[in-house]
Image (cartoon, rainbow, N blue to C red; front, side, top):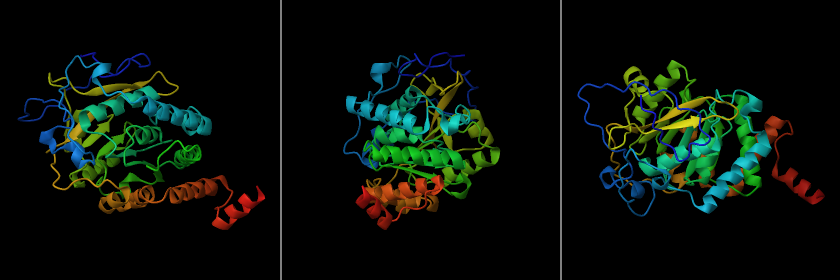
Length: 347
């Protein structure tokens, strides 16, 4: 098996998981370079809100740290500050140490490598949108919100405790004024959504997903609009493509090697492989992707509309929504405008 890892820095990585069996599809064409933002893909940056087409560059087996995009000093500082705020707010391990590895609490370095590859080969930039299905405490969403700073970084979580902790994290970030209003968390069952329309990039630590959810996600993917084109999953290609008939193909380098990232988890020696997929047939949107979250809300599933509208609205509305959610589950009751005025007067 190949032992090459597609990473920026391997110092904090566990050994990669064994390479899965290569997908076998009838009449499969020769593998191509990952669908990085290229002109043949419909001017990705223009469609995703950018102003110009990115430079064309092929990935090779000699991909190194210098060949992958490096965040600016300011972006690195924002990301590191966010992780520091989260550690203070809810601790280094997710869910009161409730199964961090099981729920995919990646290290900052691992998530950084995933973001870097999304930028380089999947057109991920500030004009895109990002969803984490099973968001946990929200660290992948927080990372994407800070760098590259997408229009909306949306996390949906089923488990009550983990959703509440993500809202505590969001409140802490907003209070520190170290976050743009581009992050939103909701509690819900992805089974209630019908498509990923409005999201350009879908991420999910899906190793623990039951078969019925994987099947539903495959149906959501098929029903999504043309701007939904890239997926990061921890499930092998032969499972997603052959068993669940998901309309994707694994992204590869020019030499046919798969584009994968080995990751490590907080508080665990456990490591898993993130697989990068693109949609097939690869869609060519005819209309530019909206630059404003409130406009994107019009194309999303009903489950996601409120979040996009809050992100696209005044910062005060997002803060109030977050404060009320945290106050409700901490038992202090909903804060009204009058109660906040009284509290301010007393201080």
